[in-house]
Image (cartoon, rainbow, N blue to C red; front, side, top):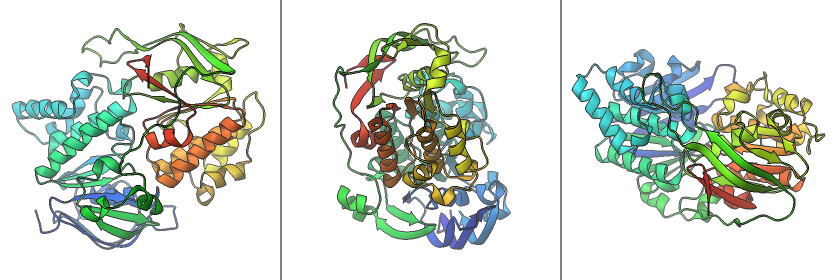
Length: 483
């Protein structure tokens, strides 16, 4: 490896169709074996920098690129991507899957190196063991939770053993245990001499690994901290910089049987759909969700927590009418809501919001949701107020699919605010959001609840729980357990 693992000299980049620079006049050098954390608000340029390092700019993302990028002595723009010694874990792991089952996915990158079969199998087993993926072996990638997909993506990259690792929000959908496992494997990469570049908002699990923390804003490198200097900052100082806590949080919401008017779920059994790839082993026989009785208070924010694969998304999609499981009833205190009724009266924000953005601009997306408002009447805020509250005014005319993942998340939450539905269910609505925008989403959920809407949030984000939850419910293997 050369004296610099990565070097950028006078680099500016703007995406096609976007007038402003995503990065402007960046000068940066990363040393071999250095562990570097990229921090800063959503849309500040962190993801763009990762795409310059792994060569997706300019080979996949088109735009205007000025300056020079050198990765391990190679100009990415003048070389095929396979020549770069870089392994990437994307913000959305689905975007990097090539096969249909987890074991083949982990093997895919190693197979493309042309290694002997014994070496391929050895690396696959090593990655499965290191990431604690024994329970996900031979599973269909289409049946995984968001956090499970992220763990498989990390394992597939680890198996290749690149010289440089680039990760974009790798912990966004991970529970605490999976995040701990991710930290351990990244510590192993660092100990092995690899260069690691991580763009993250959840900084706590990285604080002891970071050699440097680079703070970006508006496409520019604003501040640089050594690892020691960063670790000396307390939460108040981090919040003043617009960063999330690096020292851990605790849940402050109460837990217990709610009083007052409630929605009641009774006798719910959601079976696992086929979880294994065709021709492999049979689906798991246990229920994905097994709830005898659950009361969800009306006009409150109820938060659903639990490990990856615990059934949070299954319960959320059942409430939104996307599952046809016949066992289980949702009663509003007067009558039961069947699947069709839940589709009409519940607004669901999916974990992968790419599945629910349909129009040509952010403003049109919010307007469409308002036009299709449910039977409960008009939205509680105007479209202009919604965009202002969720910091979307500057991108109102942008195509939703041209936005960063965090911006897309906020657009989806905005459509929920505009929907007028009496029940709003959100699955990981703050994944990939910085402190300011996480708080904006928390405030929006409180506005919904204060207006009488019922809000259910499935999340791993403890800061979100502390900011807005009235009640916390935990799922463990699909069963309700004490918090």
